[in-house]
Image (tube, rainbow, N blue to C red; front, top):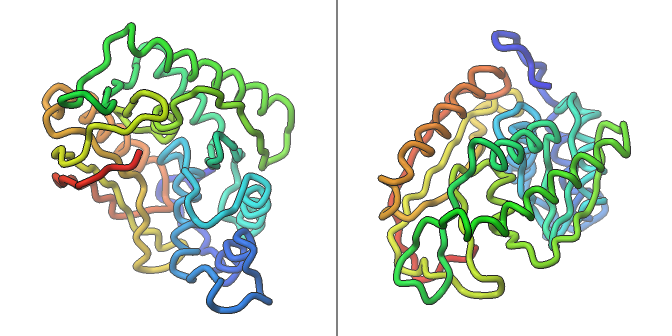
Length: 276
């Protein structure tokens, strides 16, 4: 649980945060320098986990090396020993990827999307002339997958009272880009035909990025809280959900004390290829 707003968070031991991240990647004290995770990346990884623990986002997609759910669970245990996260955390294996979740926040996000506040799905399958919003019928399949994931997380949390838990969901024919986007808290998420390319190459995309400073880990450390894109051509139709996402992030930021100086920015980019 994050410190109370206005409270002074306890500084975190930098050497322990660095060694914990290196061990999660299998590059401990005996490994050569070339294999070691840079200290700056290790501290940023700790900051990303802290953003989940502080309630700034429901999940983190782990992209720091080849660590799987078992290694991540040990890593999170070390971070808890260092005092980084007092609340419950869960490692979810899904289709070869691993996500770090704050279980209650992730379940609340899924319930909202399945209930009164669905996240718009953006159809970007190859062959389309341009991205478009999905209608209710097109979104039904993705919603079934999200409902199955919600049930899985409920069962996983009920199965253990450990502070750091792990599970793996059988993703089957799920569109992992869509499911992960919802879990990560994106206000709008991409969907496309399974195994297909997308139509986003050379399409103007507005990329939103939220960053904040984390002096509790290190003065001057800037941590990326969230980053996602939406086609520029759909921004006007998505204005309400984008504004709501921005407001909710600001409210969550004001309810914690681990991060300061929130900055939300956007820019338009066009890329020759876009991987989802």
